[in-house]
Image (cartoon, rainbow, N blue to C red; front, side):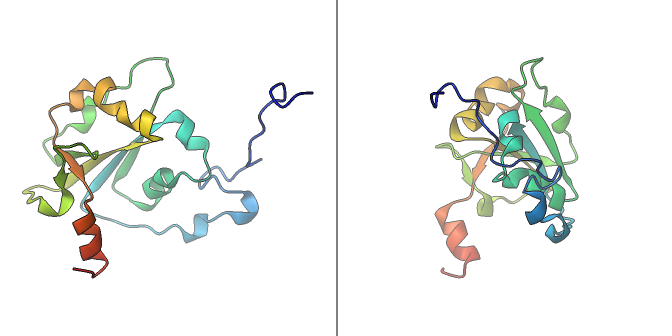
Length: 153
């Protein structure tokens, strides 16, 4: 049987349903429970959910004030209008040319970050596939922000 004719096997057989790691390497008991004012709304591509390297779903489990939306299943378009609420100042974490540095924000309300999760191609489609988010400011984690958090500046 040629390599192309063989069915692709999952690298993680019978993974933990929560952390997606091998059951013998399950890290569920180590996932912290963090209650932040900032709300993280993860918009994940469905293919990303099976990966053992997917840290986005781990973040959703760790952050009490977070949610997960799955896109790309093809049944119907995912509508994200319900994320747009007056309870939060909402931003899209996306490294566009006009993106603001997270450290430059001066919010008057709690912040909601809408975070695309997937490979670059999947994540970049968030702008096109979700016109309801087009008016939201884009934010990024800049190199200066990272250095400040590491005590380098």
